[in-house]
Image (tube, rainbow, N blue to C red):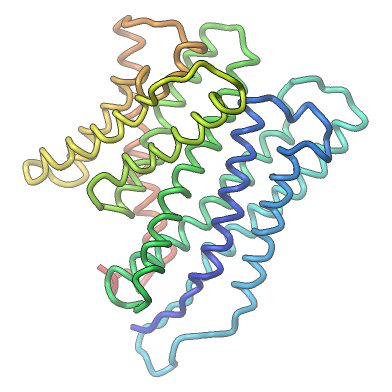
Length: 333
């Protein structure tokens, strides 16, 4: 098998997508998106991320390097860039729509279709970059792509931060929605979605990065950004980021029950930790947004949410593996 890498383009694009995720999180937590539409730091950060993603996609798609034609199977890693390009198109359309709506229609702090499309566009860009980097990392670990050690490490780091960025972008939209809702029922529905999201992100991440402690590292990146925004920027009372305990517990349980169950079964069983420790996983947001309870039906729904997220995450990983790699999959197993 021969392989044409686009590693540099994916690293550059991931930088842009991470900046977009940070801008999204910053905006949701501080609600500064209602300020100066063009010159607020959040918007400048957002536009910078878009520009970097555009440069990365153009660089990768214009690269003419291809694998040798003598190889029986050759693969060019472009699927992630094409998917990110779709997300970029959604972002640009939604961004223009959002600016026009904010300039000419006073929508206050309500959630609009343009806001939803902005989040969908960001997640699509993130997903595209993660698909591409996951393929790059898999090829490196199987010695089908021989590169310097620092590039393997950089790809690993960007995958960790990239998965954290997807988690952050999704949760930020939930938190922003929860801040606008005064209904207890609505907030608990959001809590279940947050429980689903934790495993929906971390289970596929664990498939891509089976390294011990990888889920904890992703949670660490997620919690580090939240700590900086809340404590440094918003002057929140300093706190211990105990949210990482759920992810490291997930890592530890996977090691402890390894060999006793099939891999997917073990992953599904251990994923329940995120729902059962929901108040820990999303601390300190849970203190302000969700009333403390151990009511059986509520806890059962949160645990069920984490199991649903894990199941969907494994299905998504398998679907992308087959859909993107196709016949190449047999060569990289």
